[in-house]
Image (cartoon, rainbow, N blue to C red):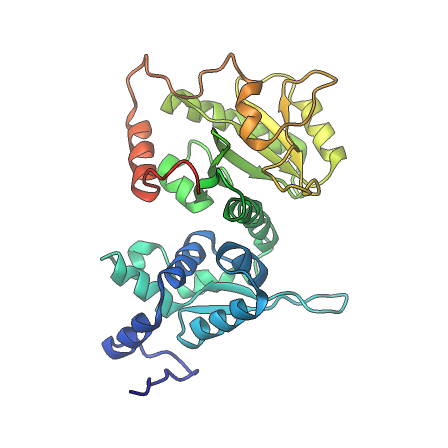
Length: 315
């Protein structure tokens, strides 16, 4: 029986069109849609590293999803010639299908087509892609490394939903490798903000730790070794476990030995991400069981449990 193709013009959001689109989506397709909902924009290469293996099948499948109006794309203008990769965002039909699958509404998903496409003209798109690239590297490593797993990746929007105005991290992650695990907040630094403003954020993370009774390491992902050195000079003391690394130290990605904890000795060697907790043996990380859990901590645990059910230790 031939498949009726949805035309490439404006999508028809009726029951028949949704049923046709849903019938052609795979579980992996829904993962693509979920990631675009939460993380706003991903390039073709990032999606390949997350969900596919080779470029041609990646482009072919994304073209089908675009034809079904579940995703859409834009290609940024490049001032010095050449071409930028395709950047993908969630389409209206994709949001409708995610809403139907979750028994909710597009509005409750937090999706709006204008907001989805606003990233294409936003000066923050580079920052968003940088945050996403950090986690894409971790996810890709986990796909190809035994005993490694990216157990959580929450976007800035998801973090705001959990912690409100207490702190606004760029993302939250949970990385597991070779029997060691670390939960962390990420601050992806592009160099556009003064270092004084960067260090001003530390007070909000201290307030968050005090309110939730959860001490979570804070990772600064910086654009240059010079900026890293200058930031570390400004952070003379902190109650928080903090580590820094540089974007360009990517031989082994952010999972590798690129992290320098604070405080550190002059001869401190850089550490792997999963090893960082050993740098702060005097701190009790995670919930302080000697004190009653706060409402914020309860909602935090419940939310993570709903998104990331317990998985096997190894892949």
